[in-house]
Length: 150
Image 1 (spheres, rainbow, N blue to C red):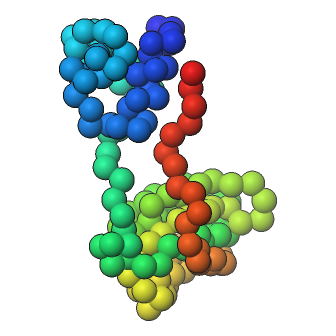
Image 2: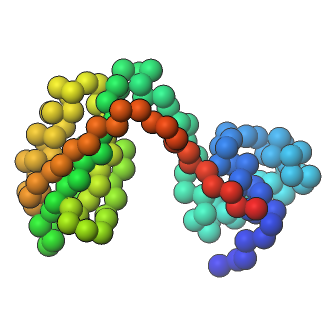
């Protein structure tokens, strides 16, 4: 795998903030030609450093008022299968394999508490799920998808 240099890190910093930036604008900001910016971004994708470019949606404005974190205790031999089934639930945003007593930490969004109850009922019926413990976020104080790289 090729080395990542300072210019690559600067590209990654810009893309963390503005994933839809054009190669012309990226080149201007970083003092390189658009074709050089394109080649570097393509290489960073091939290296797996850029997984995907997405838009961050304000779910609350779309009617999803509840964000919850669910600790899911799973039978050890069924962890992968449970994670696969959880990943197929549309309202699941993240699934983390964690240390400690619960096996997984699952982040979900729901329209309201009744909708959340339906999601929890679905999760509870998955073969291998032993128990769940849910915490509802009152408000999000920080939500970021970027880190300082340079």
